[in-house]
Image 1 (cartoon, helix red, strand yellow):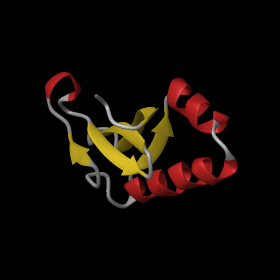
Image 2: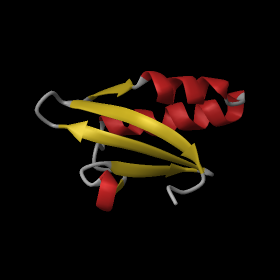
Image 3: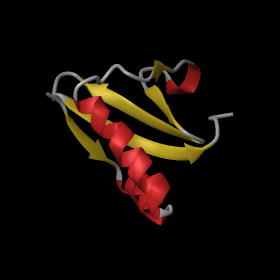
Image 4: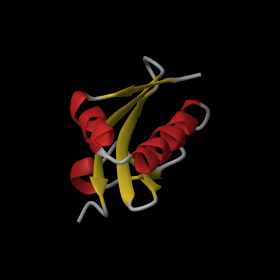
Length: 81
């Protein structure tokens, strides 16, 4: 089962949110341990990354199969525009 890790920036953003949204993000990303391919594959400059939509937030992450790690790269409000 993969380990979910957060970059400093992504974790910092999540910790700034109110308790309800923070809980939503952490609960949703915990599911990536069992289903690392859950999010939508991204194209263009984000190719190789995936996006998980959690309410109004987009969680961008990558699954590193060789190390069995899901790395949450960043969280943004709304889309990736």
